[in-house]
Image 1 (spheres, rainbow, N blue to C red):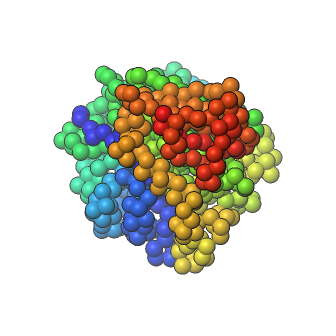
Image 2 (cartoon, helix red, strand yellow):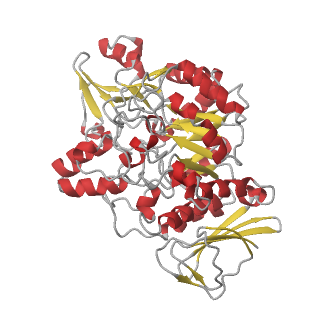
Image 3 (cartoon, rainbow, N blue to C red):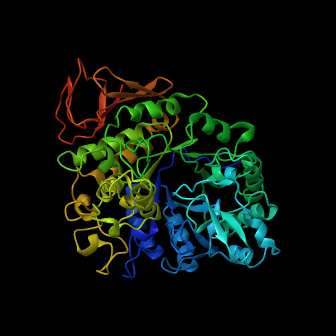
Length: 545
């Protein structure tokens, strides 16, 4: 299986329901993305990763698929999608489709037939138990039991995520064929990138009840390699991005290279849990999180000779996290500087950078006022489990912590302008609340400001793509150091050429004996003040030595 290398690409992730509403019904759509292609081309990105656009009940943001070969009517139809791929291609932008491999919606025709009779062939597509032993009482990732009873067949089906997402039985040969057929379908419509969702969970052969998160089960590699062989055999121009939450360096090397390879690239989760609750994860908060973790968690990926530049995709925010600046930067006086520092940190690293929609303008968490404003199934389950059942948090604590780390924070409408609904549409109430800062923080305003976060992203992308710096920033060796003063030093080296990036991720001054590392390429502060011995709050500088 030979796959296209995208090491020099920049990916832009879109949550379609919140990007742009072209028909003013309160929901973003495919035509909305088409309308903004010139904006994305001007930004400088090379590929758009679409979160699922399939027919769905949106029980889990579209990851509950009802039909893999149709578009959710709220988003448009297949004609709209074909127009998107065609027009994107004219701008040299590829489309990456999110392929949900682990599960289908409980409304999918396969599962409906499976529930009619255990004699139907579709019944074998899923994982069933007549009775639940103690060893089989696994928990869902979203909380509660992972087993749900179906009266019509007098059995329990397995769901690792929400009960509306029924796990597929990858031990059944028809499952692989069906998933490969889905790849063919979208490939013919012009898709050249495929993100394989939750691939580490597909194997669930654990009769002893161990490994309840079902990660990298005993048949995972075998089944995924079969899938790759069938699905991608004659497709030499595609890119595969594997999603395996929390993947370690050893796992990335094991499953991305050599005999057990199942993906040419993996999404890098090194940073995503910084600030999460130690006991409660994403739905909690750890106020004692340490900025040094940005270096400590990423260092091994960066410095390993076994990890080539095309193996990992690095991100700050995505649809499963809150907004990076609200988590780790500054929402107030140093908003611009902290946003630019995080961008400079990301683009200085070895690996493919992925920008989440709105990140390029420094979008912030929207400030939800109560439980009633949250939409995410994971957040609503957190109130039931962490407030109601386990009584770890009070109702108000849960609301505060979800405002920090909850997934709804990154799913609000894109801030296009200071007009009604942030320019997301012509006035219809959006499906989820708008951000609180769109009047002062939006695309229209930042396009006019040469020192804006948006124009900083354009500059850093141009720097990465330039003939002068590309080899160093894309192919160069990477080294990360924590300096005695608390700053990070990132060194990228290619042959005899070297780029050094000094990063201050703190809201304090950081002193140096000598800050002169060479010719300044770009800085997170735009005033061009010269200093040889100090970095200001969130001040970071890229040098050519």
